[in-house]
Image (tube, rainbow, N blue to C red; front, side, top):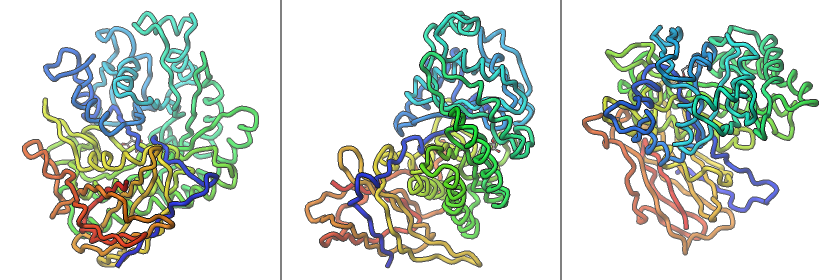
Length: 505
Ligand code: AHR
């Protein structure tokens, strides 16, 4: 039997809030994410508002999308924002050198992105170009978006149809500058970061949260920690005079090999789960270093790219990164969200890659059809934790062993929301065995409580939704009779390869 203890009595001074921004998203000019995904153009027969697909907006609003990162990714460090403003018919055509050498026609630019965020009612998160862009270019982009006065740049925005400035908080200063963003060393990038960040100004009352490029967690840990150490050391001294850094990014993909997602078998399943669970160790190590320089946890970790990376679907462009999304992906997502929730004192934001038709997507589209992936349903089931207070969990799990790998099978998160409602999310990543579970609540009696629960599961680890059968994997009710209550304890059988969301009233 596995056992969980949930601490429901945390002193006000020790309470940690799970930022809703942990449930953030990322959309890059890559494959069919923007073009033939989010953006169909105003003349499309697909229902749209100002060229943006209505069904996608509706789906993302339903999961309370808190923020959207754009325009990349690797694309960000070759993107020149002036290409994407003004009359669309005059916008230049460029080569998207990172993602298949396709022609980028710049139909989706700053105005279209910020309109999308307004339609979604979410915060925009723009990643600026350090790799191939200038400081002047970055600082003028911020001026174009935020300045309400009559500078030449702001007048240009007004001429392009937007009189009042937008507000923007989250601003990335480069992306993966150790790799596609310029192949820099940590020492070189940290100098550049300080220069660029100095000229990212707060104008007209706008207040930027500036994010420095961090490491990628799939690289050797020594290298990862060196990058973090260098950035933290250099920026913490400079920040004594001017708040130049507010967040440090971290990327980490659960890479499972070259096979498509739907070809997952038990061996790849355990590899995927083990790699998803590695996020906990990675964050703990990075946090240790950050704590040395920033004990009060002011600087947030921004995990602005994470998710499963499988081989592409057969017959699709390998550089478009189009992959299906199965029950395995759903569990990869829930394990990550549990880890981010657990580390919410330091993790201020996370962005799964990528929203539509690329990597671990929320939705897939084909012509006018759109489907919700199993990962989408996890975000829907977990949205209750957004801006809630974390309830620490102590989990004594059973293990599952396959070959030389052993993983703990029970994982989860618990929180209490502003209406004092408790939410518990649990997963069992044993691919074939149910687990008897006991949850004990400190100082909290359950006899008069009402339990409502939903479950996401399937008999197959590769179960997925298709355009022909879009509801193969979706949450179902989990009857209250499954729970047996005794004082401050609840007992039940947690089904294998499943995610359970419980609400206690
Ligand atoms: O998300 C796909 C790519 O992965 C991004 O462009 C890059 O930042 C990362 O390597």
